[in-house]
Image (cartoon, rainbow, N blue to C red; front, side, top):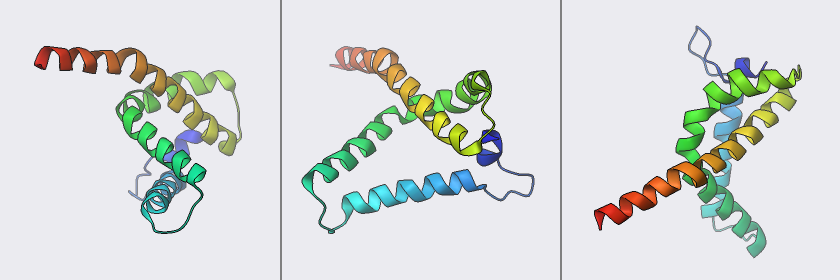
Length: 116
């Protein structure tokens, strides 16, 4: 199940899911900072993805394991790990974006007004 992809076994070795995510993150950063020619549209898409994930990262941290894994994914009752993997990240990114825009961003704006 999805939990087995992301949990750390008793031996302390990381599981495949964490390695896949780390590899994808490193690849995105390397491509966006490399001198390899990419069409402008692809560069803009990569830049948007990296910036968006960095903005919502705290919201992702708050909800990914507790809310998505233990409350939302069991509602779907899907037994295929790969579908659960993409469903997990899709739901996490959508909820994190909403949480960032509706809760975190207003507080950050309020903080900036107070500190001025």
